[in-house]
Length: 259
Length: 278
Ligand SMILES: Nc1ncnc2c1ncn2[C@@H]1O[C@H](COP(=O)(O)OP(=O)(O)OP(=O)(O)O)[C@@H](O)[C@H]1O
Ligand SMILES: [Mg+2]
Image (cartoon, rainbow over all chains, first blue to last red; front, side):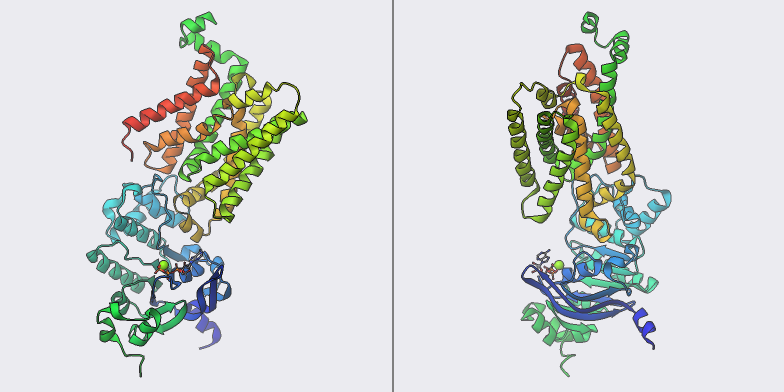
């Protein structure tokens, strides 16, 4: 395989990335490359720099050092239409008058709609139904529950049919059945489109069962690879300091990296 | 005049009121203001900048006073002065850990103090300053109308930006991730609001300018399910209150700004009481 071909198969490339906020080091010398079509779960303790990593890839945070490429370009050169994002903390204005479909259509247009065209409404309806939120059409966002809002944000991220999806703790607030549906949706979407998925999660079990790759992060990159290997007891212990609250999970898929 | 008092809303009287050139100028200026405030007001309200309108009005006072002191048209000094303060407030908000309202409060007091200083340096009696404090329909000059028209034209040019402004107002991080220049837009909106405030001063008076930006939008919020609907509602509330307020002002010899703002407050109260908030 020549060089051009091999870069074409890499969706996200991170080289020696360091991010510093004032004198706080959020990410230190992180390098990884994610192939096209991978479903990557990112795990790590609170404050590990997981959200910061996604924000760097979105161009929202500027690296202190190192280099980042998304589809071969620096983040702020990538066509935003190719990227779908569900943030961890919604910075939305809850008092803003908005209908669910308007929020979804904003994901199509990258701008707030004055008036929604028929095709846009249909696209919004289809994707809302797919995330189990069809009944939210015509309702105002200000009254949504946490899980309802999360579903509409998921719909907003997928409506543009992105090649790269970044989800920051997407299961937040979603009920248990809904969670299973969500993972099915992610896997189906990925099979259908060949898109690359990056998902931050605290659910190791979900990471183990659904992801093709797992990133274990604790400011530095602790592990990166197939779930069985990255979620090894050694990696988790290194990232979290202990695996006590894994409740046996470490037993069920530990040891892969021990060799 | 007598007839006006006896029957303020008769057809003949209405025609008579609007045939007066100064009332026509006031109406035009007032409707331009209703359009401008209806367009920018929802951004001001949803971005939690209601206090900004008030702060900028007081900043404008500093500019007006400087104009009076220098003996030049106060508005031409107030425009750059107020726009400069708007930039300053936005910068302080973005750069420091000071909350928005505190930044406004600091600039507000600073400009007001400057204004008082300037007025005191001018030894003659400055009755004209009161026109700017309280507003007067008699004071609207053709030059003011030109200023309103230019600002309306400028605003029309920003129509293509409305979608991304609204997007960033709803969720700033999503808009930024979609490459909306949110910081540039903060400055742009602050300066445009500053210009609106200065244009409105002659008519409404700087003490009441903020109400114009806030109350119609807040009233419209009570019954709007969409942001575009809120803008339309704010323009309608502003327009109705201007027409009725000016007529009441003429008929009962009331200060125009106060009459208009009281009507707006009435519409807001009725909306808040009778509309199910959606
Ligand atoms: N804009 C910022 N300014 C200063 N410090 C920041 C900023 N953003 C993040 N940090 C710090 O960087 C570190 C990493 O934050 P980040 O949000 O990436 O963590 P995380 O791994 O997503 O954690 P969590 O699981 O709690 O969401 C934290 O210590 C946080 O306080
Ligand atoms: Mg996070």
